[in-house]
Length: 195
Image (cartoon, rainbow, N blue to C red; front, side, top):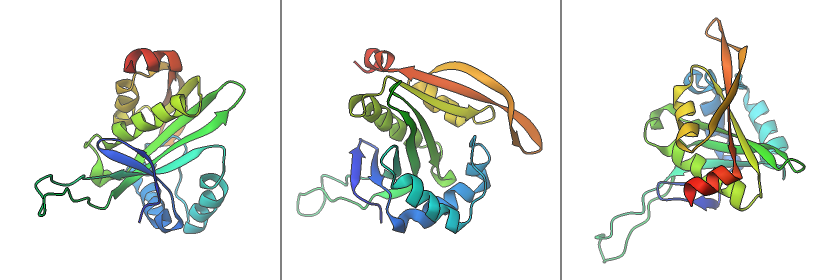
């Protein structure tokens, strides 16, 4: 069961990660369809996932959240009141490498394959970007995308991130070297776009 609601949007809510969520995170990051397109993920043991939870998720510097799709129910439910369904975990999102001097941070996202192409990644990323600028006083956000990960690239472009450059052949995937693309978004660009 997901932890407390941290941020809530129309389609998804972002929840704190509880120990009971570690199995889901462990399975997701080890799924080759998820792991291979990520720019820094390798297969992990459950012990490593538990250490990640203790060392990173429970740390005060960054923010690691569970993405949950939610259904607010049907207004015509029996008794006239709307029913609320339990949120369904579909992945995770993170704000990390938080630098207080430059007021910058990096974002990352991983959605379970069975939930791809539903807009959950974009909705979750939009919530975290707004949080980073509105509540964490960030000036600049960055995201890294392996050249073969078109879905992730589309998320950042949809949210107004600018392609800032690439590092050539710095990833090794499927027997080939791949480029990593960097995307950035400044607070003023976000305000102009969302305002």
